[in-house]
Length: 329
Length: 247
Image (tube, rainbow over all chains, first blue to last red):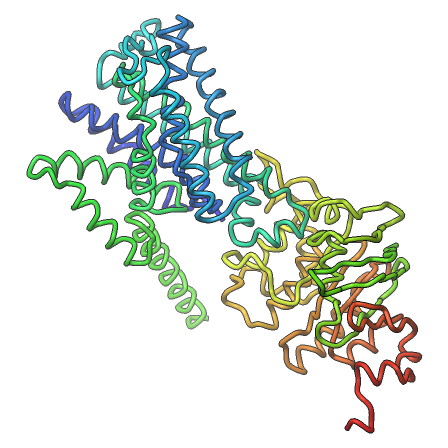
């Protein structure tokens, strides 16, 4: 079950403060890396909602974020609709697409679920790749950013854009927290442990899976639209299955089923990518070695292991103090 | 309350139930007996909707539920416990019960309210825990408690959905004499208006709780009557209990 423990709240606040500090001290490239981390964290968090709390290991979450990016690009660059409306429509559109994929795939399990989501992702990739309207192989450019000049914020400034992404990630975390703490989220966790029992107590398992998949799609829509605004150019590569695989790696690296873990995973992944690639082209090798170490070490992930250690320390400290009090009495 | 008429099911050449007809009244405790492979669990699987019968009908409260899904039947008040524990293993006992209680209270699909902490769910959890002696174990993880307590939770999960008909598949399966004795008390404590159909191999428990008994053999109902009639039935002794001559 998901509980927003004091450890998670502390980590969330600490991460937010670090990001704000980085945003005000980093140079242009540092801000670009920060934005990249924040957008990837949103996508990984959306995946954690379904995989970490519902056992639905999706290989189309990267593609769904790509669908969001294209939806935003079509609404703004192609149709000329205003940006705030386009962001809302993008979230809704991606949410609906995710719900449909969830509804279809919820009837499959295990490896077949993974394959079904992969097939959906590849279908989206093929469609975009072949579509002349969507720019095909060349992608789409001229994508506008949100205009906040009315409140004196210039989003073409990298710092401001990074801070907006941080705010969006924070909102996504609150949204995911709310959903996972609701009846729907509790039911999702239940069916991850025993689908047979969930059915026997009268739960509509397929509907629960589809709903949470759709809700995670809302986050992906927002992440996709921010990703499109960040680069101001999109290409079919966004929908490649390898990107969805990367998102899964990030989620496992940070800690599946922790909600905060994917944020740590995204930071670790992007920093490794940029730092190690300065020395060698084989930076994936370093990620691979760390991932193997994480999986061999109990599969709790970087943040999951830290959280487990802290919680254990807190428990042992509270039990020690209880014993001291009872001895004094 | 529960009306089963001419229920038949076969897997290939194997007829697992043949024209099974059972009528269980409201509040009745019906014990299903039969040797291994008699079709008892398959009958339960058809009653809850896991298997669809080849022919026959199932009615609950006069409503034909034969073609309903598992969750629709559960929502209509049909609940079951399994022979093998089927629990939410990674969760606490209280969370297990709350998940079951949240369905009929309408909180299991809520996107904003926490189903674990709503007062009506918590009240059901408390009542159910008291019924199955789990009050002092609510904060423990399922994986941290004994097998006997997990069996109690198995029954508790079925009860927390607040059913009108409870199907119990060998609730004392794999537990020791002390735990069987505890189950006597648990079963006696259950509300009198609750209809219970129970598959049980422990004869002392079966005869103690039963208002009536049905015996299945090779998928067919071969006996139906009171516990006293069952005790004196030569047919029952031959096919299930064995005979003095055999001994």
